[in-house]
Every structure is written in C-alpha cells, then in structure tokens.
Length: 159
Image (cartoon, rainbow, N blue to C red; front, side):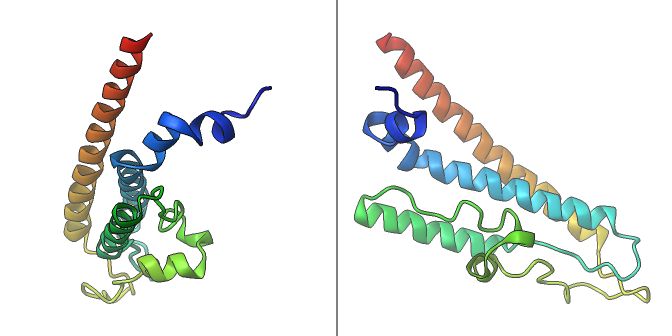
C-alpha cells in the first residue's frame, strides 16, 4: 500500500500539477542556472591573475531562449514543464545537446583583451556580470519563496 513520495503523491493530482506546471518549475530552473553561472563567474574572478587562464561562462541568452521555448511548449500542449534539468548546470559532464544549448564553457573567451600572460579575464566585467547574475538569482529566489509561502498558507487553511 505504501508508495514512494515522488511516484505516488507528487506525480499525480494537485501536487503533481503544481510542481510540474506554472511558475514553480520555471523559477527553480532560473535559480539553478544563476547558481551555476555564479560558480563560473566567481572562478573567473579567482583566476584573474592566473597565467593562460581563459574565462568561462554560461550563455545567459541561450538559457533564456530555451526557457522561453519550454514555457511556450507547456502553454501550447498543457503538458508538464519539460526543460533539461542539468542543461548548463554541470558543463563538465553535460551531454552534447546541453553544450549546444548553452554554448561551450569558455565561450566568449575571445572577448576582452588577451594579456601577455594568456589570461583574458577583465575583472571589472566579471564583477558587473556577477552583480547582474546575483540580482537575477535573488529575484527568482524571492518569487519562489513567496510562491511556496502561498502554497503553505493554502495547505494550512485546509488542515
């Protein structure tokens, strides 16, 4: 009679719909992408003086475009939100399709000035990208927190 939490309870009914449709899965992906990109940008800052280091980044534009496609597909079909959970989060072990989705790590390595030591990290640019990325992640996390607070309030009222 016992079912696993994921296969029984979340997979069907109200909770299955809530966790696979609407804003929740979208916000989850945005927070995850912001966290993954943040790791790359922090690595760039940390290696700003490392000889021969080439900057690494995840393509924000490609992620946003693919996210929009997934949202449109969900709205058109009414199916559960379908977006590669690992796309861009672990490029080191990502599939070739995920690499095409978000561009190779190191994409944009030609951007900026290549210094005599072979490093192309522009610390001011990286800091600006960090601030922008942190803001995006914080906005999505705040919205996610508010959405989950609404769910908690709705469940508490029924108890």
